[in-house]
Image 1 (tube, rainbow, N blue to C red):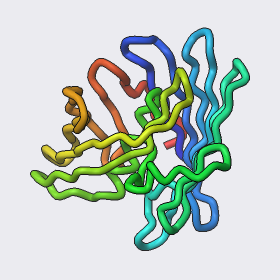
Image 2 (image 1 turned 90 degrees about the vertical axis):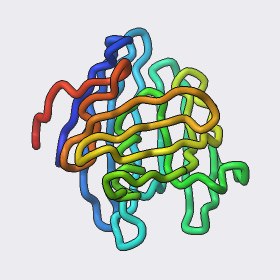
Image 3 (image 1 turned 120 degrees about the vertical axis):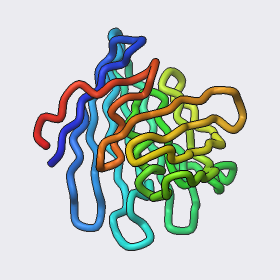
Length: 183
């Protein structure tokens, strides 16, 4: 098990995430404390050839009673709370608005060379409403430990710093890693 912790640089919230290998999957379990609301999620990722770091399933729960179940099958079929979501067919990754961990998924999956860029679509989960929408993004690898993240349907962009495993260390204005307990 590997443990990561981040602090929200603007919000002061915290995330504590444990990453555990399980059979043919990688499982992330996390608690995100946003002050008045606490979110807990469990996420499964593929680990095999051609499926490494590919999103499989998410179960998200909040302390105020909200919940979301999100999954993606081998045929790019997405389901939100059991209902098919064909509007997400182009998405491969999930992006949780409240967690820097989900930036690791495309960074690891794409394995970009320095100077290379890739356009992707994510299934974006809004942490306040739990609504899921298709979100076009671009990742550009600047050097060994820096990537530029850009929203392709807006003007938001940030240069994020990652460790040797592609896990976010610094996401300016949003998140900063505070410890590597258990590494």
